[in-house]
Length: 257
Image (cartoon, rainbow, N blue to C red; front, side, top):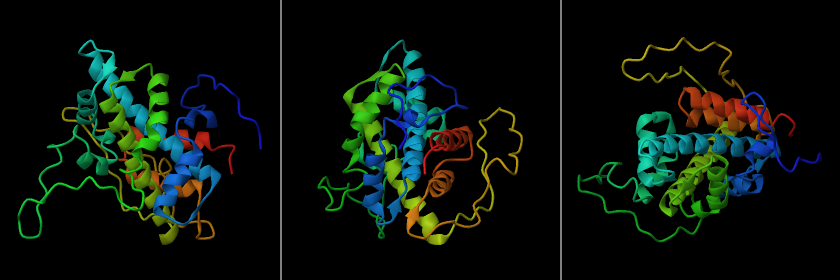
């Protein structure tokens, strides 16, 4: 195994090293995958999932920083998170966390049961099997490290929300990656392009920009890097965030197997 440099240098999107995904370690990623599937997770798949999660959280933090800057604040608060997501629908990820967070309470709509009555709120008791919500605290160290790398500080409530979003997003990514392996690939009938009112429509994507995976290559028991990349195309909209996540994940796993 090659030795990784202790301190990664600054690099642009075209030059991404494995150390750039260090806020979310492969061991943590594999623990999340074990919560949802018994399949083996390759080293490159773990690095890819860590990289994608890092990219998503970085975009959210940067959006929150811009919202805070408009109010001449340096410390991020939950309202900045809501502003970031409101301005960029691509950042609306890890939505299973929203029902458990006071930040999003009242924004996810009222849930009704089969008879039309308002369903009671979810209980607070933890499940026997670890879930994205129960395991959210595992991401605190990585979230704080990522905040520091972006020159940001945040109140504890926002750190909690970033923990939860990261955990829920990675759990969903793991489920979709396992589905890709089970079903032998991703069937894509088209793409969706997000355009804000008043903005010109972007040029159509090149046919080779987001290649579909017609078939899974593997033993059917192992989640590989390409399975995680395919799951990323399911989890993220067809905008700039998805393309950045795919590009950075490919760069982060260039020298892994």
